[in-house]
Image 1 (cartoon, one colour):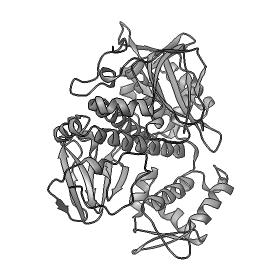
Image 2 (cartoon, each protein chain N blue to C red; image 1 turned 135 degrees about the vertical axis):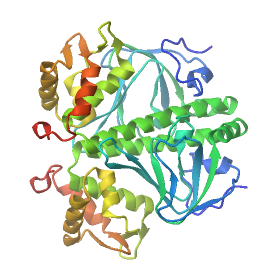
Image 3 (tube, rainbow over the protein chains, first blue to last red; image 1 turned 90 degrees about the vertical axis):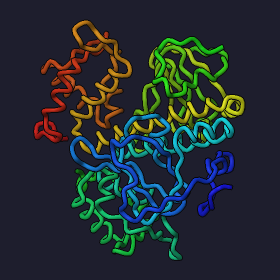
Image 4 (cartoon, each protein chain N blue to C red; image 1 turned 90 degrees about the horizontal axis):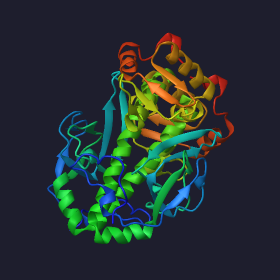
Amino acid sequence: MAPTRTASKPHATLQDPLDYLPCSPIAEYRKHQLIYRQNEPSTNIYLILEGKIKVSRLAESGRQILVNIYQTDEFFGESALLHLSRRPEVATALENTKLMSWTASEIEELVRRQPRLSLAMAQMLGRRTTEFVRRIESFSTDTVARRLARYLIRLSERMGDPEEDGSVRMLPFTHELLSEDIGTTREIVTQYMNHFRKQGYLQYSRKGIVLHRDAFHNWLRTASAKPAKFST
Amino acid sequence: MAPTRTASKPHATLQDPLDYLPCSPIAEYRKHQLIYRQNEPSTNIYLILEGKIKVSRLAESGRQILVNIYQTDEFFGESALLHLSRRPEVATALENTKLMSWTASEIEELVRRQPRLSLAMAQMLGRRTTEFVRRIESFSTDTVARRLARYLIRLSERMGDPEEDGSVRMLPFTHELLSEDIGTTREIVTQYMNHFRKQGYLQYSRKGIVLHRDAFHNWLRTASAKPAKFST
């Protein structure tokens, strides 16, 4: 039996790992609860049935680097598949979350019976690779303000709910978390979020972030890549 | 028959795609020759039998972003596996190169008969994901000088030949290419390469780059993450 699905399937020509995975016991985690620590032995691969997970890495400098946020129907913990002896990152629940998990050996045994499972996993990792290249592109060519704008748009595409007026509503991701994705401080994110709010590109409160994506896209198109006012 | 191997195998517990792939006709490319263009239809996945390939992306801003350099026994062009209609990047030969290639449908047919092939591909893409996270970490926390030092070390680990005195010799990668990895201009790379040469961390000429890796590691350990002299 396949796990219950809540999100839409990816493009039809792509394989979907969920079609090939048997159920495992469901583990529940509360908001902020740790799933695994950095440097812990890599054992399991996880599938999110419900909720959101933050995967990040503590850099040598002591700064938190966001690897990604994963949501329902997405996998994380693939370092187990690589037989890395230690987790290169930490995973925590961003909200109350339900997970299934399999050991790397279970996955490898499943692959023997369901060859398309690992093709599906390869495709999923390939898509993530493409996203990382886009992020490196943004680090290479964009100011902090543009990186923040692009990250908000990316988040809204993956995790936003469209409103009637064409805007998109998201969770109240903290300025701290946004700063961990784009490689700056929380204070600088707050400064730009205020600026974007004044320009009418977004609203935010403890309830959520509402993004006016078209206005943001226009600003990205018309503003220079390195505007004097925002160079950092 | 498996293709001829020239490099050592990855860690024993990992699968190796080469163990599961049949031979395909060999195509030869001269140095600087184009393998595929950005926005061209994504059709084939390539394996390098001999030589080196540069995969990069033309950003909106017009700047070239290095995705990666691949060498003997490595794959590239995995966007074909994702059924992306257009290549998100361009691939060119960095030296005279021999390639085998398979269409995505051929790979998918092979996977049915050799389930471990796609597990091997998933592991390879997983390792690349880990490298991208390290690169984003360096963009988030390092100055341009430190990014350059880390990239030279990473290149020397993947593609360097150890010399008797403990240094490592690499191809004469151009300052232009180095700048495309770390997201700066060729002029700034030249400025830091001169500085590193004066400090005795490396030598370079048209014949190659010789890296004194231990000295570089020491500098990375002792220099502050954001030294005033090198902040950019």
